[in-house]
Image (cartoon, rainbow, N blue to C red; front, side, top):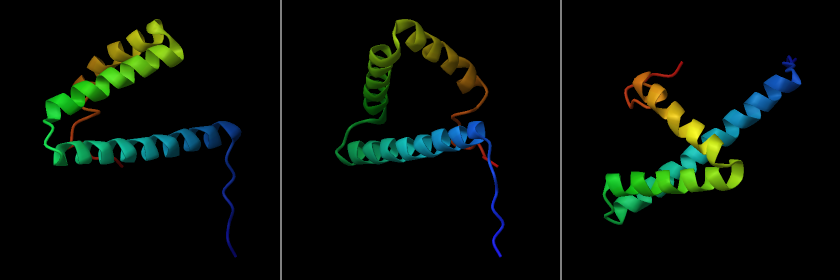
Length: 89
């Protein structure tokens, strides 16, 4: 017999967000790999990705939200969130 795990609506929302994030990361990774295979340097790919991300954030959420996102990145970088050596558990 299988036991069903019940989640609250908030937990389900968070699971959906995490799944969407994982898909988006995989798509971005594929685009990065394709770009490097085409001979584009990583710095250029990163610059283009950030330009698009900020432009689309401004379009969707406004300049204040985009600025808040950019400001949050410094702390996240310093905390090691984006480190390739970071181990997720």
